[in-house]
Structures are given as structure tokens and as C-alpha cells.
Amino acid sequence: MKILSCLFLTAVFFSAAASAQVSCGSVLSSNAALTADLNCSSGFTALEITADDVTLDLNGFTLSGSILQGISVSGNRVTIQGPGSISGFDLGIQSLGTTRLQVNDVDFVAVAQPLILTGTRNALIRRNRFVDAIIGVEIRAFPDPAGSLAASGNRVLGNRFNRVDVGVNVCGYTATDQRIERNRFRNVSGFAVQLETGARDNSVISNRFFSITGTGVRLSNASNNLVQDNDFDSGRLALTLLDNNGNVSPLCVPPPVIGVVTGNRIENNNINGFDGGVTAGLGVLADPRVIANRIGGNVISNTATGLFLQTDAWVNDATGNTFSGVADPVIDQGNGNSF
Image (cartoon, rainbow, N blue to C red; front, side):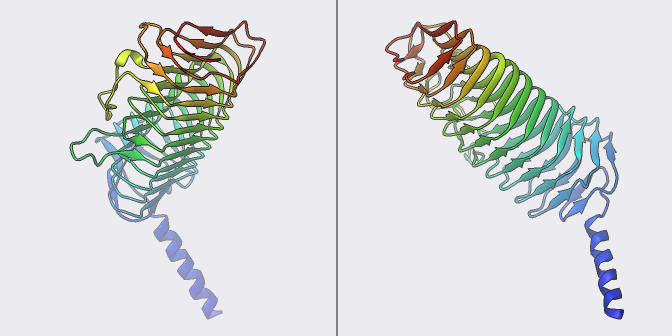
């Protein structure tokens, strides 16, 4: 009996330690958990995590506020764990130059930019919900002089996005090897997924897109990316490849050659009920801009235009696609394309 009492007291002690309440403005260097809803209305950042190997458990509660950002992360191997919510901030979680951040099972509600990963590597963003946001997940390769703020190896898996302008944005020439997989995007007014400003060697696989009033997947000044096995169901434009008139974001590392979109693979996607299936080029110039991409094995149905290869789309391989109930399966205004 005495041994059982000691074990019980030990368990209570460790449970209390793990559930120590944090307050607005806390700088966390060890594991912590919310024990009640926390609303922050002064300062710039609600919570900072500065040490390595720290877990913050939202523990079913809500971190909210009217200030700039909810959580700033500068430590490595940090985990922010739900269930729980983050709401009301301009920026939800911001990570700068870290590795192996995990954000799991968190609801981001009415946060302008829920998650910004700048120069972040090997992060895992999993099973979160993003509602009423401008940009859900932003992954940036930052143009620092030392070149240390590349963004690589990040995973965005099994999340849900609803009523967002942009779901996932990947930006910069040293933004490589992101995997965006098994997410659901609904009611997107801008771009559900955008790879821009030289983003390369990234994968967009097995996602589902519903009610897209903007564009499902947009490749802008982006090369050698894979868009495969996605389902697009109803909307304006399913997929676009374009050079954006040579415009790139000043927030990210630009590509060495601006205005070329090449080597992308758009394969085995199902597209149903869109105004446009796959659009290559802007049609502003007759010079080659969207060059030697592979657009094949896609099933396009009940769509006004299947493939639109504009004047700046050159030598793209668009063979092997299937069309059903499509008014104009292929419009080719470019040069040397095959279909």
C-alpha cells in the first residue's frame, strides 16, 4: 500500500509539472501545457519558444489574441501539439531558421497567416485545420547573405483548408523537397497551392480540391515540380503554369533565370467541373516561357477547356490525356507542343 501511495504521488507530481500554466509573454525553454484558454492583448508575441526539444501542448484549450503573433519558434525539434485552437492573431506560428518543427492537430481559426516557415527545414505540419485565413501555410526560402535560410524537406500532410485566399505557398529557388500530400482544400478564392519564385523539386500529391473559385495549383516561375494523383472537383482553373510576367517575390530567393517554367510534371490528375483544366502560359508574349513540361495521363471531364497552351508555351509534351464532356479538349496557340 505504501508503494502504491508513492507511485500515485509521483504520477500527480509529474502530471502537474507537465501541465504548468503559461502566461502571455512567456519565454518557454522546457515542456509546457495550457491549463485554460489564454487570451493576449498586449505586446507583440504571446509565447516564445527559444530552446531545443520543447513541446507545447494546447491541451484542448485556445490561445487567442489581438496582437501581432501567437507563437514565435527559434528552437529546433519543437512540437506544438493539439487538440486546441489558435485564433485572432495576424500571425499564428512563425518559425525562423529551425529544423524539425512539428505542428499537429491544431485548429487555426480567423488568423490572417496561421503558419509561416522561413528558412525552416524538415518540419512536419500534420492534421491541422485552417479556416478563414489569407495564407494558411507559407514556406519561404529567405535571401540571407550566408545562404543559411533555405527551406527544404518540409511536409504538409493531411490538413484541411477552408475559406482561405491561399492554402499553401512555397516561395524561393532554395525552397526544395517540400511534400504537400493528402490535404483537403475547399472554398479557395486565390490559389489552393502555389509554388513560386523559383520553387523547385517539390511534390503536390493526392490532395483533394473542392469549390475553387481561383486556381487549384499554380506554378509561377517554378520548375521541376511534380503534381500527381490529385482530385479537382468544381471551380474556375484547376492547374496553371506561367512565368507571371517575370515578377517574383522580394521575400524569397529568386531563381538564376527569371521567367522560365520548365521540367514540371503534371500527371495522373482527375479534373472535373472546371472552366479550365490545365493552362500553360500567360499568352502575353510569343517568346518561350513555359517550356518542355510534361502534362500527361490526366483525366479531364465536364470542363469548358481541357488544355490551353498559350502563345508562350513551347515544346510541352501534353500527350496521353483523356477528355469527357469537354467543349474544347485542346487549344494550342504555342509552338512545338505535342498532344
